[in-house]
Length: 445
Image (tube, rainbow, N blue to C red; front, side):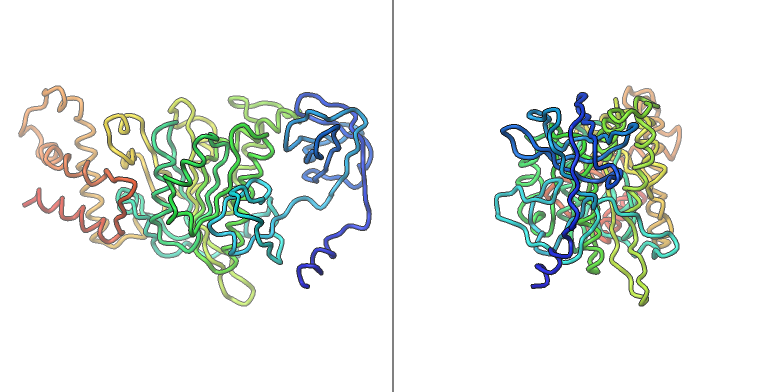
């Protein structure tokens, strides 16, 4: 009965419609009904021989509204009716969504039947919590990955970026985190993913165990830019629902770069001027609005605190250039970055994380004194080996020339083995520090 009452209350007694005036590429111009329109409003466009086409208002030009479709524009004719929904978009998730796979609209695509609908609507483009109302990051989060647990220790409510080129192992790393991280719920956003890899990621990489406590949002690379962008908003909206239930949420998104590319397509179609590498100004405006929604939960008026959203967002660096515009912008927003390098992957070490270039901004405050000493000693040895690596490999380094380099050469095989981890292997935070300490002590002895 409550669901029925809520549905009736959402009905708008005023029906507003417009007409298609022109179609330019992916941009549809509409006339009529402007008094009820706003940027972000939703609409349905009738088509010949096809179901109605969902669209969104992305701007205005003189007396016409500019809409972008959520699907192909085939069948749209001049004068076609446009039914306007000025309320925008929202989703009504429940805990019954765990273990399910949905699209950018929150509709199930796993063939397991309809999803239960919750009472409270969650806006897809919600504002981040106010800075003064937010709690601080919580205690350390066990990620199950040795290299990250030790060298980029993450706290609950922290946001980290995973920066890597294509084919370096970002998706495999995300699956390890989804299966092994110590949290209550996992929300995975596959934004602009290859269609072939979605089922492979869910069935093999994520697995039945990982999916059981996860919600997966999918928008493949062949889908329109609006759907790819909305899938990112959907991922955060579902995360916010679980956060408000007091659950500790791990939000994984692959990738932020494809979200920015979708926003670039939308901005260029709406007439925005291109800036660096063709990205429009709204790309850099929307990035912090999206990423800031993750983080520590807000403090409620009664003094209780919502659960944290720990965010790990992958960034697909263009041409392995870690200083390209999107990577540079995201790095400045997040609370740390994990750098994955192709050269490390090519020599067979996975996950291919360069721990010397990776950083967590909650360190060293989230580590105990003896843990900081272990990490400092290991970093010193890794840096010494990295500085002399070329000379060592060609045999030009003479043993005894530098005690630090001699020790680094002794430690290197054990450290490489420590940093390497199979996708099915999980190591706790305490065990990670204990294993690294043992390696350092054996060489010292």
